[in-house]
Image (cartoon, rainbow, N blue to C red; front, side, top):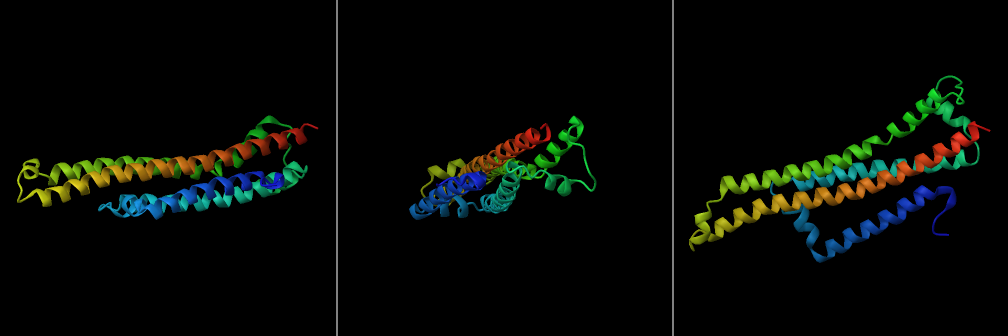
Length: 201
């Protein structure tokens, strides 16, 4: 089976991210990746890419950890969750303790979503920086002068490049990382459902 039922989250994570990395490789082969990431003179696109890689590694780590946890919970081994999050025995038949565990489970992965939204916000900042660079450094009259059009075109390319490339890189990496986060969140919800079903038996 392509999807391992014991490690369903990790299997889906690998399939989706393999497809995404293949698309990145294909874009690189077309020569677009260099333009998107390295044509930005403000290095905002490079910063977004580095931040995305950090978020991606974090999401990979949690996909692996939660897959292992979900496997144990599915088998009915829920005692390890108590030992993992609490220093004492907890009565999970009480709703407040159930909510406490739910909070513990979800806050561990919240950083993935935070990084994802940081990516798109930095991309929007890059758009503003690019247009500001354009307005501050470009004399539009130079575009009509044959002797200055080359220099003016360079300024125009740099400004628009920063604005557009940062936006594209920020938005695409945001969508990628958010999908990873929602896969993990869905697996957590399923695991928590199994946990409650065993507690109530």
